[in-house]
Image (cartoon, rainbow, N blue to C red; front, side, top):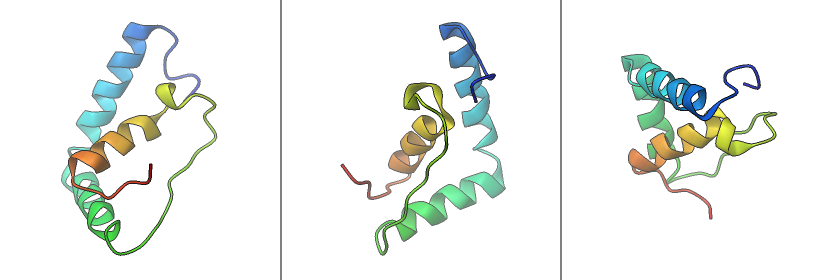
Length: 73
């Protein structure tokens, strides 16, 4: 992820591409499944990026939240 972007405009473009990829049927199904599972069990998603604001997990959290996932505070 560190090489994905370096300027604010590049980060916005990166996140737009990521969100577009996550709309594919297989990815959308995974998001819906994780959102449903979040109401029955606890799980975590992590990576090695230092800054969540410049990481796919930032957008993944938003996608899960939009899908109705139960998120930890």
